[in-house]
Image 1 (cartoon, rainbow, N blue to C red):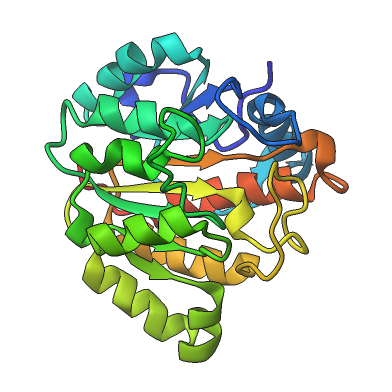
Image 2 (cartoon, rainbow, N blue to C red; image 1 turned 180 degrees about the vertical axis):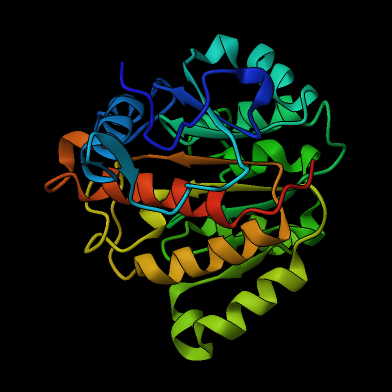
Length: 283
């Protein structure tokens, strides 16, 4: 199996960031299937499109040369290995970047990380609120399922544009802040980013469903929704959050079998590189 091209160490011990693939979609209800393929495809595309051979040496599509940040690709794990794996990563003061898989995986990751971080400031990028409470433990109830583990006052959802009434009721009940793509159009990306940075607290965890981005930029997702974020706006916000410092991140719901010329997998690879390159380490 290919390792992601951003990996620049073979030693877990010296890594600052650990890439973890979780190729599982067992708790998805989406009509589109194939998110379990994403960890493999994103790694493959990273090597095909984000690394280049120059005079017998490998050059990356982001200036990691000279960077002191070390990235280790752990490979893939199963759902039942999440607790053990993330305990190892966080207890070693390393930052996990996970590649799913369906979005329900985030619930298990946050539950595991809550053993180290008492309350997590959650930044949840998604087209959907995932705030269903009448049915739990699946990809549409993630935010409800992690409420005991997060600080709602310093958490935020970004990109939301297709909520169910039950989810709107829960958003209002818990007073969770939501930023829609229309808010960004109205207020501008700089002002929105400043408001996000003012909102988030300590122990920031970013969960990034690729369907938060408009299908024009990311067609290969399990539940595409029109009128989403542009890829540059999403990355602008992410880079600012990363610079402030994160304790972990995941990228979920890439569906390679429905992608167009691997645009979505390539974008996911670049998102990972930009977050690592921009990140200020908080652990």
